[in-house]
Image 1 (cartoon, rainbow, N blue to C red):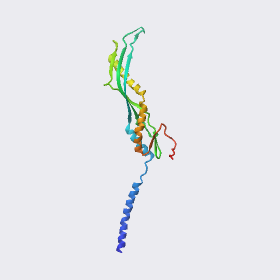
Image 2 (image 1 turned 120 degrees about the horizontal axis):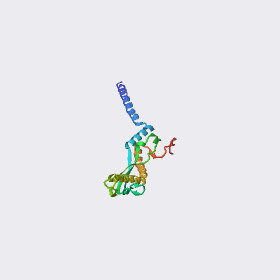
Image 3 (image 1 turned 90 degrees about the vertical axis):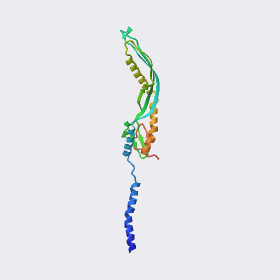
Image 4 (image 1 turned 135 degrees about the vertical axis):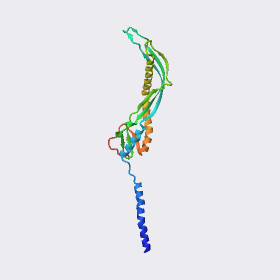
Length: 209
């Protein structure tokens, strides 16, 4: 009789322990997959945190010639000498992606793939390196404002840096570097394959065989 009571007590105390132990395993082993909306929100949050992502920097050295003609009197003779300046300039331009432009419409998620449309690469900024830019020569007329003319010459030199950057391959390299840097980062975050595309698929994408 005592043995039966003892075994009954063991069973009575053991059942809650058994259920509690296995319930903990059941609840921790079954982790639901995040929804597409959750993955999209997570990706956009992480991407927006990067802001304007600077990816390429070009340095330029240019010779800028600036000339301003003096007005003529009745198209007969000049009232003053022309103003001329030559600058030896150095500057830089930076290509970037503005990741704040990415929205939910730029992302499509399937079971194992994230399709993403990135914003167009752009010229983040361009500027002269004033410490390495020098005025090689300057000539102004008697009635010209020398300081204002030199200031306009520097602005022209800065625009020349912009034009040189625009005519280079800086935007192409910016796009290549964006793919190279962002893909492993986003694949680590999402646990899915990242495909950058110009057009997000609108129909359901069949899984790969």
